[in-house]
Every structure is written in C-alpha cells, then in structure tokens.
Image (cartoon, rainbow, N blue to C red; front, side, top):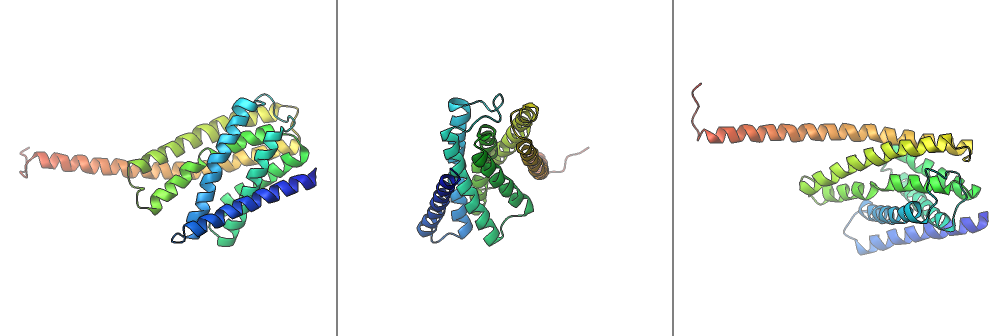
Length: 245
C-alpha cells in the first residue's frame, strides 16, 4: 500500500515538474518565477474544483465525519496535491523566494497529507483544509501577474485584493474555526491529527495578520487619494479665483 502511494505521488511530482518545464519552454521570454506561478495557478484551480466536488457532492461532509476512512477520490486528490507541494517546496528552497512562514505552511501541508495517506483516514478534513487554503490561491497569483504586467493599480487590482481579503477572512479564518472545532470535539480523529489542525489554523492567523496590515495600508492610501481628489475638485469649482470668507 505504501509503495503504491509512493509511486502515485512520484508520478504526480513528475507531472508537475513536466508542466513547469513545458511552461519554461513556451515562455522563454519570462522568468522562472512567472512559469512557477503558472503551475501554482493551475494547481490552485484544479485542487479547488476537485476538493469542492469531494466536499459538497461526493462526500462525506467534513463537519460531521472528521476522521472517516479515505475514499478513492480523496486519495487521488491528495496524491496530486502532495506531488505539487513537494515540487513547490523544492522550487522555493532552491530559488529562496519565500520566507519562513510560507515554508512552514508548505511543510505542514506535506506532513498532513502524508499522515492522511498513510493512516488511510482523515482525508475528509484534510480535503476540506485543502479547499479552504487553495480557494484564495488563484487570486494571489492573479495579483502577482497584474503587478508584473503593470496592471495592478487599476480596478481589476482592487477587485482581486478585495476578494482575496474577504475570502481569506471568511473561509480560512471563519469557516476554518468551525472546522477546527468539529475536529477537536470529535472522538474519531487521532490526537496528532488534531494537533496538526491547530498548527495549520495558527499559520492561517499569522497570514491573516500580514493580510490585514496590507489591507489597512492600502485602504489608507485610497482614502488619502480620494481626499486629495475632492480637494482638487473644490479648487476647480472656484474657477481659479480665491473665494471670500
């Protein structure tokens, strides 16, 4: 069983690496990070679609059945995702593009998926965490691509940032708290699975602090720019003449 899982994960790792090489070949004028983020965007969309189908249609429901036995589809999605995280962690370490928090997130994700695959259980809640954590990933990559192409300071950039902050706060922090509570009070998941859930949620809060600081700074800049435009409009209404008090 373990040997079979190893081969499946190795095949998925090779698939993601091959996709990265293909992007590098097709986008020779772009840098390595551009092509890696294309892989990340692809994985984000794929994992969200598959994990949503598992959670909302195929089942079981993670809020009521944490710790249940893994389904074949859950195993398949976890193998695909594990292969991606191994690829991305190796890329980040090699090019030194990420800080300690992102590396910790990748490491915890890898350990959590391996644990679920080896145990043959808890794939339900791991899949739910995958859905919540990857839901904002395409938006994060879209923000980077907008910045690289000089289109970030536009209405599209504002929409992407708003959706990212709103979804991260509502899903990873709000819904994530509910999922963690169900995990902790359920007698089925093993204790180290629960510890892993607490660790992942703690990492989400670390990200949340950085995200809200960014949102506060951007909101302040937008407000000051709006005040400046209002002041200019009031001055224009005077037709260049100083108004008498």
